[in-house]
Length: 193
Image (cartoon, rainbow, N blue to C red; front, side, top):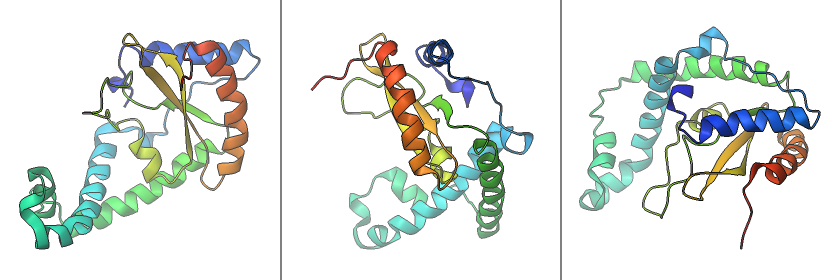
């Protein structure tokens, strides 16, 4: 996923690590274990699962009001990707194993610092940005806190996320409060209402 990081996200991650280290917080760079590190395989598994769930979710609307659905939604329901039932079961089982591997990794840390999005938040409301960096945390059932700590070239936030182990939401909220205050105070983003 890191290859998707944009020109604002890369320095924001580096600056965040520096800010945290300078504040006396131990920061380690950690890679995914080999069974989870293959980005193409992870993306394929995620797509199989997401398309399968979306197919079931939109089936009723497809049957009752197909004309008002987008072509992309119709393609999902019609399974134009040709994902088989066997592929879906295999993807689910593999993702479950990956979930345990990543959770075991996360249990060694107060939080994992990761990009929230590919880059700076997009201008306007037409496009909300890519989910490349956060879709896996949802699939791994891990709690995530977004921290809009940095500012991009267009004055929009560059968010980073803190991720915790499964079922450790309160721990992440406590860690997140301390870490986010530090990052937001020094990262450049100002909250305005």
